[in-house]
Image (cartoon, rainbow, N blue to C red):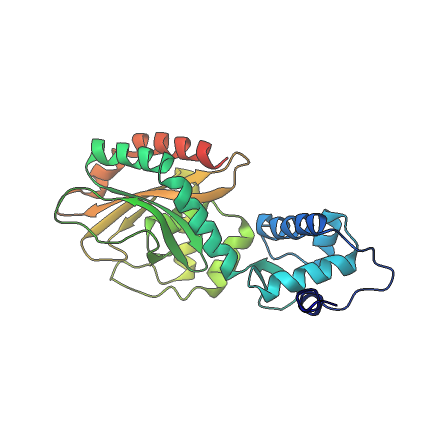
Length: 269
């Protein structure tokens, strides 16, 4: 057996007796399909559930998942029995969003910055943090200097709270149970008993705000970006120093932000 084929066989484990040999194209399709099933699930998903959705023999699915796990594209949950997207898949998702955003997302955010005069961001949830996937800075000398790829805590930023409020019960439960809720300012919400009803209110209101909860003197406002099936995939936020923009003044821009959010939703649907 050639060395390359031998290594490939060792990576996915021994062949199950009676299993039909798959062509490279067919096997790749199954690998991609399995990864899509894991990533599309709003909660950790089991081997049996993945097998049922793929309609592929369980031994084949087990080998595929082992290879995906070995390459960090998926990983086990805390109990070690179910699967979630891995760190490598998350990085690929960010890169894909940033690549697509260089044109279409840029136009939407640039329009907001030009009309409102403050910095706008698009962010996604990653564990207990929000990661900026696209950002357009305002021209004011007084501003927060973050870049695409910067991470900020979800519990005390408008981006994070907007995403969490519109996330599934499973995602919110995982966050509430595992996030540290570190305090950064006197306004930071460091209590789970306070955060849970706040997220319910944000979902009802349709927007989240940050009243100097992460940085003293900086406020933020965010609205969710929803896919066509209603899933929250990201959030759009404005942030500015209080010396230039109050939260009350920021809320005056909610109609424009919601319109921009609908445009962004059409780009990810």
